[in-house]
Amino acid sequence: MLCALLPRSHSSLFRVSQSKDQGKRLLSTTTATDLESLLKRCSSLNHIYQAHGYVVLRGLDHDNFLLSRFIDVTSSLGFSSYAYSVFTHTTQPDIYLYNTMIKGLSRSSSHSPQKAILLYNRIQFAGLRPDTYSFPFVLKAVVRLSDINFGRAVHSQTIATGLDSQVNVVTALIQMYSSFGCVADARKLFDTVRFTDVVLWNAMVAGYAKVGDLDNAQTLFDRMPERNVISWTTVIAGYVQMNRPAEAIVVFRRMRLEDVEPDEIAMLAVLSACAHMGALELGEWIHNSIEKNRLQKIVPLNNALIDMYAKSGNIRKALEVFQSMKHRSVITWTTIIAGLAMHGLGREALDMFSRMERTSVKPNKITFIAILSACSHVGLLEMGRWYFNNMGSRYGIEPQIEHYGCIIDLLGRAGYLQEAQELARQMPFETNAAIWGSLLSASNLHRDAKLGEQALQHLMKLEPHNSGNYALLSNIYAALCRWNDSGMVRKVMRDIGVKKMPGGSFIEVNNRVYEFIAGDKSHPQYDSISQVLCKIKGHLKMVEHVQNGGGQQLEFDVLN
Image 1 (cartoon, rainbow, N blue to C red):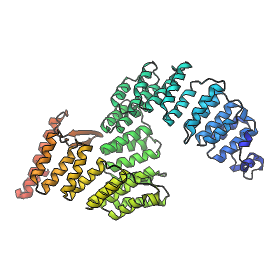
Image 2 (cartoon, rainbow, N blue to C red; image 1 turned 90 degrees about the horizontal axis):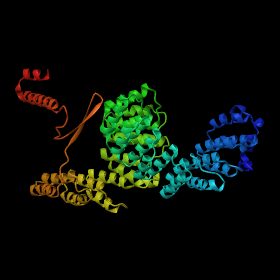
Image 3 (spheres, helix red, strand yellow; image 1 turned 30 degrees about the vertical axis):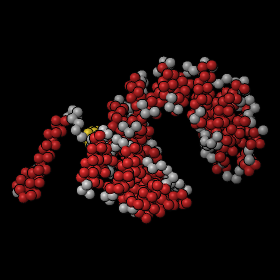
């Protein structure tokens, strides 16, 4: 009996007439048609117990459709184990009920995806046949379990049942193959169908974006017979993830020109691009657009605004967004702490961390990277040591290589080169390029040629074509007047074909970001830009002349 599943402590919940506070009771209706309304008001396990009692006492548990709604809501609230126990006591489940339970288990945590696959395998034993919903739901569980072999088996079953040409099945298969990085398999499947369904095309574009193949993603995107906001967002986010923010912003501009209204997720993606490029004007425009269109201020969107303002140089505005938030996640706190540290406000960052602790938000490993970086920026050596040494015992977070990198950087900046080297040797990780880079920077700061030589030897193996590493050691030698050694480093660079990477910069004009590379003359307005630069250079020379005693009248002419 389903009643046996209900805890004794909740049995009184089903006697509605005995409730002392009818206004607070969830069970206020008496007909089966009101079950949908009842389920919509469920938000806790106690509510689920009461709703289940309502179902059982009125015999609604024999209606698979109504029971499916109950199981779906229960699973969506995170109580898939309870939903599964209800399902296992069902006497005659149909394919609709099976699908609902597989769906619930496939999106849950722990061992639920395994149960979803086992349940899927039981469908045929129950004398039923998988339909076009069964396959997409079980494929989600396949992805959760990272079982590509079973995914291929499911693909074979779609062919055997003749459902492999259904658009939602094909879409689910493409998403499955893309999740495993098998984008060639996904494309082969995509090319066998002739659907114009935007969801299917989005899945294929997202597959390319997931593996970083933005050229194919863009090509397919341009061919799409129909696009929606998800199509645009997928490409924008793909460029951001591949550290190509300028192209992400170009796509966003195309999106606006075609009068496609961005949603919260699209704004989130383009704000990340603005943060990468320091595009403050465009970021402010996006912020104003969010306010104007009254988009839902989800926590990740506010986090992106904080990150954008901090990385674009406006920490005051970042703090304003932070203070305006009613709900803050650990990412929110970490982002503002990192932003304060980036602006050299190390003590303010540590004060913010103290506020975070007082609100009972538990820090994560990224938070401690921000904290240690804050200590490094302002030279708080002892404070940095304390946080590093107490991460495990006080906060339950074991230091990762990134944390070792931060504390080694802090020690190196403070001149404790021997201690930094010793910590690098003792850490339970293989020393990577970032740590050797920190030691090389410290050796340059404190003119330690021996440490610089050692660091460069390792960096030549780890990142042999990084010209900056060679330049640092050459600078150390030059500062010590060891000109022959400095020249020898330059010769080594030439001999092994290391070329100095040209410098680059971004400038934002009228909400548009332009990138300039040293020595690059390809910009269509290069001549005009050069003329302006020549005028500025001439003005600066005149100002310098005035400052050196060239006369007050000349200074007036220059300034006007």
